[in-house]
Each structure stands twice: as structure tokens, then as C-alpha cells.
Length: 299
Ligand code: ADP
Ligand code: MG
Image: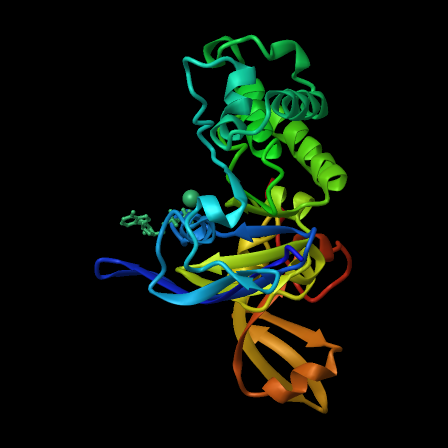
């Protein structure tokens, strides 16, 4: 069993409370995304899981085993960063073999693991090159290869594609999805990019200001956002958020705001009669027609 459970993680740096009550589960073999704006605490969550940082409260489990007190090395977790952090004086083969050598694995085994990972990533031709002789995309592949050879229980990715240009980024996204399919290992992937999250994730954990806002499938998050933050953060072009009030006239329910009155045929909104609400309308849900709203379309 190598699913992950984190329970009530909290963390401060000095007087700065950066994580509060972080709890979620990632099933064995699942691809989960931690999504949220820059500075919301995503990397700190990953660093706690990897054991690179110490939490103030909470526990972390892999399967049924608590790993909260284990050293990073004992956790059997591999992490891939945005900066590739390759050893510049070692060639690709040596970079990928390094952790296995440290574990004193037999040479033949090391060679086989490195070759297999290199094949999986399509970098067999690059094994003798030094990092400075590689493109950004190739370096990121080597960083991935270094994680793969360790055959970890869990992979953690911290915005691994952010340094790549847009075209390469979308190609690498597809490769990562394929890699997950082949390896079937539990993966947790941090990004602030909602498109990356929506295309890669089986489960998305949305964070803001050090707290979890919603956990769900991409469809849940898009169609049934838990709050205004999630609704506004996901979707491009953005959802329209309009403040107004629910009213009733002749047994019909309306959404009213300055100069606009919409008849609502959703009876669930009856419970909000007389209250101020925020109405969210996804752009693709709007069609042109003879309607109650007059306006001009700007392009
Ligand atoms: P994200 O990865 O979502 O951009 P981080 O987890 O890196 O966010 O950071 C969350 C908050 O914690 C930020 O306000 C950041 O400045 C702060 N922080 C992160 N690491 C440290 C640290 N080692 N010392 C002090 N503050 C930190
Ligand atoms: Mg970060």
C-alpha cells in the first residue's frame, strides 16, 4: 500500500503561519495535483511530505505506516524540482546512477536501471553528455530519470515544467501522463497553472493562503466549485462573477442587480430570496439571443 494520507498539517515560519489544517488523501497509484496561487504554501506541503521541512502539527502516512518522524532518506519518496539540480561535473549516466551508487547497489543492477529509465524517457543517446550540453527539456528528463531509477513509493513534483517554453511544456505534460500510466506510481504534482492541473490531475487539491479550499476531480472543481475563490481561479476565460440579490414576484424568482433582472428557473435558489448572492456564469454558458440583457460585445 503506497497511498498517501496527510492529517492536519500546520506550519509557521517565525510568526508567519503558512499552513493550517492541511488534510487530504491520495490513493495508491493516483495522480494528484496541488493547485493554488504563488505563495499559498504548495511547496511547503511537498517539503513536509518529503521530510525536508518539519511540521508544527499533524501526521503523514504512506499506506498504514506513519512516516512523520522518518528522515527524508527513509521515506522512499523522490522529488523533482523546477530547477533540475543536476550535478554539473557528472554526465547524464552518472547523474542518474548517483543515488543507487550511494546505496551501494551492484553495478550491473545500476546499469540496467539507468538504461531502462533512459529508454523510457528517450534519452539513451545522451548518457555520456554533461548537463551543460543539454537543452532545458533534456535536463528535465534527466531529473525525472534520476527519480525513476530509485523506484520510489511516491513521486513529488514541484512545478517541474515551469522553466520550459510553452510548446515543450505541453509536450512534457503528455509525456508525464504517459509515464504515470506506465509506472502506476502515486504522484503528487504542484502547480499554479490551472491548465496543467486540469489536464494532468485525477484529483485536484485547491489551496489558498495555506488552507485547502476544495478537493475533487477536475470536473467537480470546474462544475461545482466549493466557493467563489475556486470558481474564479479555475477556468479560462474566467467565470463572470456578478453580485446581486435574489427576489420574488408573482411566485417567480429573479436575480437582480443594477439595471438587470434575470428570471431564474432554478427552484433551489428560492431559499436565498431576499439575500445578497454572487452569481457565477461561465462564458461558454452564455449564448446570444433575444434576452433581457442589452449590451455590447467587446473583443
Ligand atoms: P508556493 O509553493 O505555493 O508558492 P511556498 O510553500 O513556497 O508557496 O511558501 C508559502 C509561504 O511560506 C510564503 O509566504 C513563503 O514566503 C513562506 N516560506 C516558505 N519557505 C520559507 C522559509 N524557509 N522561511 C521562511 N518563510 C518561508
Ligand atoms: Mg512553490
